[in-house]
Length: 317
View 1 (cartoon, rainbow, N blue to C red):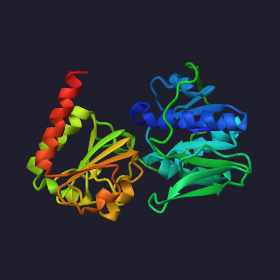
View 2: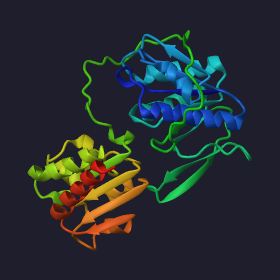
View 3: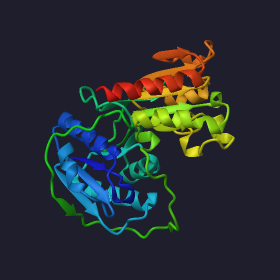
């Protein structure tokens, strides 16, 4: 059996939840078994997880505030109850704090940020990117139980079934050792780890008052905005928009880098993007070496023209 834990911030299922269940379904097919999805707390429309391959959805009430210790205990108990040999967790902010805890409780081998369906022809082999995305490592997990976290925007959600009933799970919920007094979250935008389109800018914008042309391009594309570390450090943009080795690592389908030189620390956080477009007036900017498409030019000339062209294209199509 495969157990997939799906996170649900504020009771809402996000794209990462559907990706994880899709991955669980594909893994179950490889192992000749089924998928059970696990939700914790009050979750809206959890029955839709059946559309992505879950044969059953379990819900555990009484633990609405996230505490990695409490959640790990719940996930481990659920895995034992359903006889799961593989536990799948999204590689989001909560998943990163759960992977090791769940693995210890189950005495399981674990691999984070997995990017492949397990190869069961000679063991249980999964792959992940290493060395800031410059290489791919294969891991053969030999323990009886396995715990995996799934790299975001790697396995597109696939509808393969229909809604299933949500069942209340009989789980002993341990008392939390953490008291959550308040939660501050960014609302109204697609979070960077989940974004498929990202428009990012750096010091080439020259002044925070010039950020309007970046936001206009992002708006017309339906993209999330991001920035380089120097821009966040000087307070031009909030730190949650900082992408790179010391910020948020992202894997969008399209990453547009505007006025960013492309230091190795920045590239480490974005080089798994499927398509990279670079706009920079310096033809020697390191970012061009990693780009799929590059435009050498002044961003204050290129970006407005690009935005207008996209507007015209959308109006005519």
